[in-house]
Structures are given as structure tokens and as C-alpha cells.
Image (cartoon, rainbow, N blue to C red; front, side, top):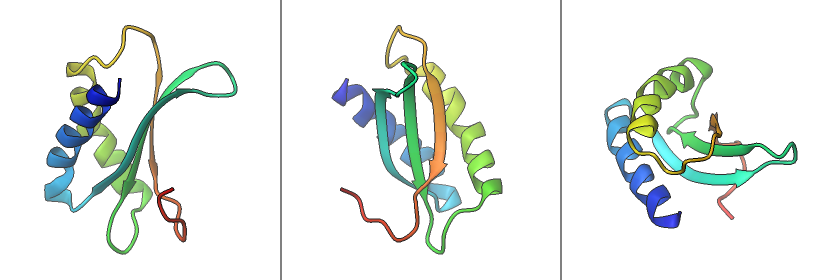
Amino acid sequence: MEEKLAKLKKLVSEALASKNIIVDTITYEKNSGNYNVLSIVLDKVGGIDLDAIVEATKIINPIVDANDITDDSYILDVISKERGKENE
């Protein structure tokens, strides 16, 4: 799974580079509601607003669909990096 996520991060990063959007992290895990969640955390110098997240999601969706990371169903969650927190 790690290799698939790394490949996905590279593809998404390349697709969003022209928008100056940075892919911070991509994770795939089961949440507390027992749903599989593919989370893509985005950032941008100066912060990223909701309109940029929506635009990025439209770019990300076909990339995720074309690169089946799992046969399981999952929720795609595209979010902004929380300000003031560093990557752990």
C-alpha cells in the first residue's frame, strides 16, 4: 500500500504544481466509523482556501480513479493542512 500511496502522491503533486498547491500527506486508513478513508492533505504558501480545495478535488478525482489503490470502497477526503501544526 505504501508504494501505491507514494505513486499517488507523486502524480497528484505533479498535477497540482501549476496551481502552487502542495500535497502534504496522503493516508489510507479505517476511521472510527469503520469506513476506509483516503485522506489527501493539501497546503499552499499563504494558506489554502475552500475554493482551491474544490478545484484541487476536481483534479485529484480522476487521478485517484485511474490509479486503483485498493479494491475496497473508501471515502476520498481532500482537506487543507491545519495551520500551526508541523508534520509528525
